[in-house]
Image 1 (tube, rainbow, N blue to C red):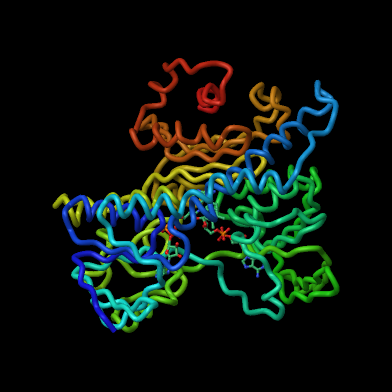
Image 2 (tube, rainbow, N blue to C red):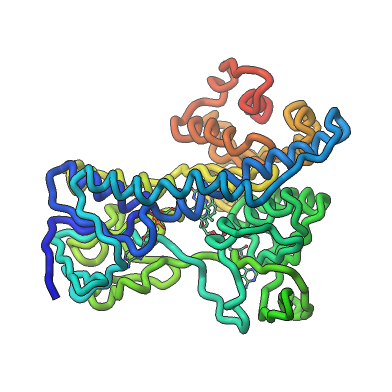
Length: 454
Ligand SMILES: Cc1cc2nc3c(=O)[nH]c(=O)nc-3n(C[C@H](O)[C@H](O)[C@H](O)COP(=O)(O)OP(=O)(O)OC[C@H]3O[C@@H](n4cnc5c(N)ncnc54)[C@H](O)[C@@H]3O)c2cc1C
Ligand SMILES: NC(=O)c1ccc[n+]([C@@H]2O[C@H](COP(=O)([O-])OP(=O)(O)OC[C@H]3O[C@@H](n4cnc5c(N)ncnc54)[C@H](O)[C@@H]3O)[C@@H](O)[C@H]2O)c1
């Protein structure tokens, strides 16, 4: 077996890995990057971007339904194969372009999974080993393995985003980000959808009051929910599937459907690395253990993005971590990772968005004597929601009245996936509410609702 030596080896060519490999090459290092699947990683190929292509069409149909009888007459026609073909115009150019970009930057490109054989060496397929002075792990996440009988019948979000057709009926296991986006897109495009969620609300990582309002609005449109329920077994019966579920009270039932999509969470994608062979510490659920400078327990091994136990598994977090690590490793700049406040959105219909202090954090802060005001309101009768016929528009904002600042914002409704970035700016720049109220926002826009919320 031959061995090639590099200053820097990057494992995984998603957002995180590619940004570090490029920075290393620009700094004059000899760099190798290796990727077991397609170059580009989850976000542009199997995540954010293809999902948003589907969501754009689903949202248009959703808005049509909201305005039906208010000027619209005919149903919009829709073709899933055409939508998939449109989606592929975004995804297919990514792998060759990413590889080309890496090569142009002077990075040596490998197409192989990598496995540690010792703390500096990784074995690739094709009988080749690569040895690095510095090793950067950016291997992302994958769907949580589900160990119940029949789990081999489940499709994942990768499969959903590349399906040849949209079935008449679908069960979605999981109601987090991926389960919610999958179910809302499918339902808007004409599929009957049932969601099985082990939590008391869908989107349980968002504010629970708003998540419950989204659930109600979704149920009124026809999406079915089984809350506090777990999927237990799946059986193929002819062309259909039976799914056993059990709720918190122990009641069991069986549902039948055309297709079952596994959206029950993701785990760090570290199995193929054989981290034990290198002695890198990790937790199977949380990921590779790193400090505030993204260092693992080994001084020459770093980890970032979804595979590391640092920050939320979100695309801009992976990119930001890539830039922080690159500054520290290749530009001699001292930096410390800091993710707060972090805006996050779920592309439900309508959207859900959050930044900064949560209801639980506000409760804790109050226990410590801090005065925090909560503004929680249903704004469905506001002009912004009414002119779009939106079934729901609501917000919950946490404010420090003494300091005259916003601490956290939680939004549900049309255009909130954009509006949340204004709240993010206000929180991160510590803008005074009195100053925000002096601003003139273009009207009638989603941004102009910010002042009313305050
Ligand atoms: C369906 C879906 C929708 C999403 N939507 C959003 C969204 O709207 N907004 C948002 O912010 N985030 C979203 N995310 C999350 C986002 O995609 C990730 O946070 C981001 O892509 C992580 O980037 P990364 O570089 O850490 O990992 P990845 O992009 O996953 O890259 C890791 C790469 O490492 C490779 N790899 C793994 N093991 C090895 C090995 N041993 N050797 C070589 N290569 C290996 C993998 O094949 C993979 O290509 C979504 C995720 C999914 C699944
Ligand atoms: N819009 C976005 O930014 C976006 C979109 C997709 C994914 N992501 C990222 O990817 C991560 C993973 O997303 P996810 O949706 O896979 O995970 P998640 O943790 O958000 O949701 C998992 C869901 O599965 C449910 N669940 C788990 N086991 C179950 C079972 N046996 N039966 C029924 N329900 C079960 C949970 O109740 C929860 O609703 C997110 O945390 C997020 O960081 C972000």
